[in-house]
Amino acid sequence: MTESSHESHENVPSRQRRRFPGISSRAYEHPADRSALVALRKLTGFDTVFKALSGLLPERSLRLLFLSDSVRVSDAQFTHLNSMLRDACYILDLEKVPPMYVNQDPQPNAMCIGLDEPIIVVTTGLVELLDEEEMRAVVGHEVGHALSGHAVYRTILLFLTNLALKVAWIPLGNVAIMAIVTALREWFRKSELSADRAGLLVGQDLRASMRGLMKIAGGNHLHEMNVDAFLAQADEYEKGGDLRDSVLKILNVLPRSHPFTTVRAAELKKWSETRDYQRIMDGHYPRRDEDKDTSVTDAFRESASHYADSVRGSKDPLMKLVGDIAGGAGDLGGKLRDKFTGQGGSGGGKGGATDGSQESTGPEDPEQGPQVPGAAGN
Image (spheres, helix red, strand yellow):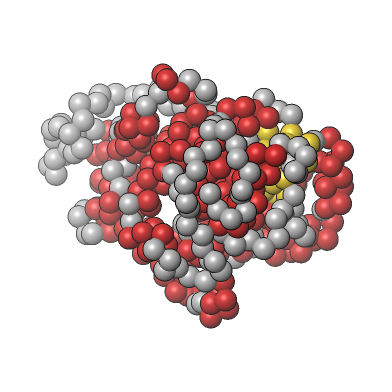
């Protein structure tokens, strides 16, 4: 265990974990997180809303609410969580330990919110669902949000989501708010990928991180689940179906604040196998005292490069088509027509589908199935 966690707790492995003094959040931030945040800040009206809400949001009321109606983690309450929190802050070198609360809610969830200072909240559903090492990754995930400065934007998203519901009856009153909410949600989903990486840096147990995500998806039936099979689902989700399925994936994820759990698991495993992750574990990583010298242009260029690599390497039918078009492989309109109708061949005949599918060319019922609800998990 690290120096800050001398208390012995049952089921907590006694093992050394690496510490990362002075680590910058740039070390683990997902490129898509950075680019989505840049796009969000460029959104018309966002600066005005951000400045207004920063002064209007009831920060003190929020803190009093959790203080009065939740259990604050401390040396006297939820001591094992308190030990994990201090340990996570020690590993990521977060100097001020944020207050942490346990809130009675059967839905497994966790969040890091606050404007002046971050507050971490975990639900009883999550505490009861996860074992010690899985929970350690979740606490590290939330500390990663705190270190990245995500709490402010997440708090504004929660406020605007509630506000959008209240003004929905006003003609056009909801349009501007929903534009910002949609952009915030897009960034929010990408920020979760960054925080998952922070959770892995804290827990330093990939299988525990995988198990935690799997339990959030399927509940506390670990004997009935398998991490490798769970990851195979992610692969099937990414490459399965045709263009219609690709569009449905986009529609399904839009109302969510979190990416799908299989996608998160696959992304985290992929990152754990990279040279970047190994370099961090070897002690070579960007440091906070270098942040002032970093170039926004370089960060945006890295994000653009990541997206290009993602498109080239993606197994999703829509992303494959985008890659083909970008590579000069054909006409966009014709390819879209062929993909959606199942028609192939350049001569306009009724040859096989260009993607090899045997789908009917007749009309389809555009049923999307039930919308997946929003945030579940950390």
